Image 1 (cartoon, rainbow, N blue to C red):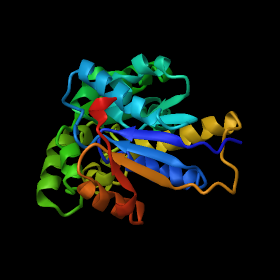
Image 2: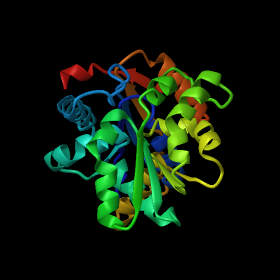
Image 3: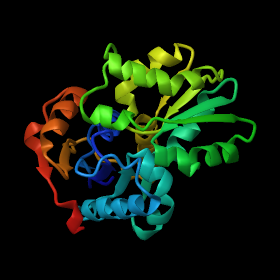
Length: 271
C-alpha cells in the first residue's frame, strides 16, 4: 500500500474528466491537479513549446511527494511524453496508449476515428500506435482546434447552435467513413460528448481518453501494490496558472461538488 498522492496535469480544465474517473476507480486516492489555464490551448503550439511546457508542469507537480503522474492531455501525451518520461523517476501514464488499447478492444469493424488538437493529429501518435498494435485496422483522423477554447469558455452543451455547427463541420467527414469507434483524443472533448454523439450517431462508440487513462493508472498501481488503503481520505487539490474563476465553475459542475475553496494559483513560469 502507498498513500502518497498522484499528480494529474493538463493544459487547462480538460483534465478534470480524468480526475472524475480517477475518483471513481480509486475513491481513497489523494490527487494533486494542475491545469495550465494561463497558456491554454497547447494544441496550436510547436512541439518544442509543448515539451517545454510539459517539463514545467511536471516540475511543479514534483514539488509534492508523488507516486505516479497522469498526463491528462492528448497534446502533451502525443508530443512530449516520449521525451520527458525518461527524465522522471516515477511512472507517467498518458492518454494515447490507454485510449488506443481501449479503441482496439471496442471496434468491431476495425475502422477507428481519432479527433484531437492540431498538434496531436499532426504528431501521428495515435495512427502509429494503432498500426503497431492492430495492423489491419484503418484509422481516420480529424483536428478539432476550436473544441478546447469552446470548453474553456463554458460552451459545450447540446443545443448550443454555434457549438453544434462547429462540431458538425469537423465530424461529418468522419461520420461518412463508416467508423464504429471514435477516440476523443483530448481530455476536454468528453465535456462535448452529447454534441459529438449527436453528430456521429448512436452506433459509434466514443472512447473517453481520460477514463481510459484513469483505468490504466489504477491497474498500474494495483500491479505494483501501490494503491491507497481504505482509510485514506482521498480528495483533490487544484492548482491553476491563471484566474481560478472559470475553472472553478466548470470543474464544480462536472465533478458534482464545489471546488471553489480548493483552487490555488501558481506562477508556472518559475518552474
